[in-house]
Every structure is written in structure tokens, then in C-alpha cells.
Image 1 (tube, rainbow, N blue to C red):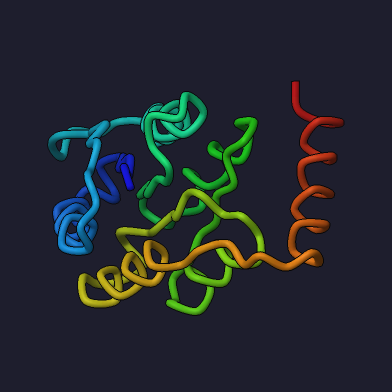
Image 2 (image 1 turned 90 degrees about the vertical axis):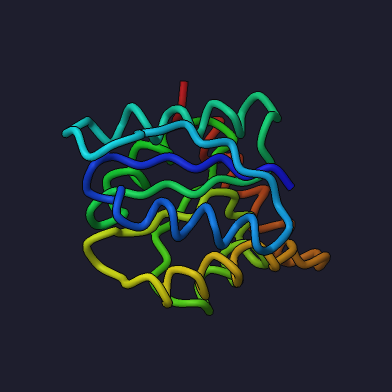
Length: 150
């Protein structure tokens, strides 16, 4: 898979760890920035990740900020982008399997390097479950998206 990775300054400390974890799982990374510790605004980098998902140039994304919450909120404003903050391995795979999550959001000021590696691995190895109840729920999410997002 191609994985888009983006971060602001507050998530920057985990970026290299995340990229290495993605590559060690055999996936390709598209790094959309930021590229140093200069203070930047998280919505700019969240949007870059989401744009690649929307255009089909990345199958999944990983976005980082201080808490993971800001990038998550920004990404969920984008049609076809389903993001969640996951600071545990169960949520990282369950979000993909049951809910169609395609962007993992992490907080660089919340979790450490080893946990980040495990969460990334859990997210990347997960596949959406092929069960009617999950598809029905995802379709309901998409109907809400169509109704409320422009």
C-alpha cells in the first residue's frame, strides 16, 4: 500500500519512527511534511494527507499532531476520509476492520516510540471485515457524510 504521512511540529518527534514502521511493514510512504521543527498549523498537513486519500494516490494515511485530535477533526471534514485517534493497538485494527477507517491519527505528545510502532503495525495489517453488518454501518456513515458535508 501507499501510505501518506503528515505532521505538524508537535507530532514531528514521532514522524521518523512512523515512517520507519510503515516501511518495515513493506509499504511505500509519501511524506507530505512538515520537514523540520518549525511551528506550522496542523490543518495544512492533515489536508495534504486527506487529499492523497481522496485522489486515490494513497490507500491509507497517518497524521500526527500534539494530541492527534486536531488532525483527526480536520481530516473528518473531508469526504471519503475516515480518521480516528488511536493510542492503542485494538482501536487501530478494529477501526479498519469494522468502521472503514483509512487514516490513523497519533499524538506525538501522548504516546512513545515503541507504542507508536505497534499501533502503526496493527493499523496497516488490518483489513475491512467482509460482513454485511459492517458494510451496513459504513453505508450509514456515508449517508450522514452525504447529507451533511458539502
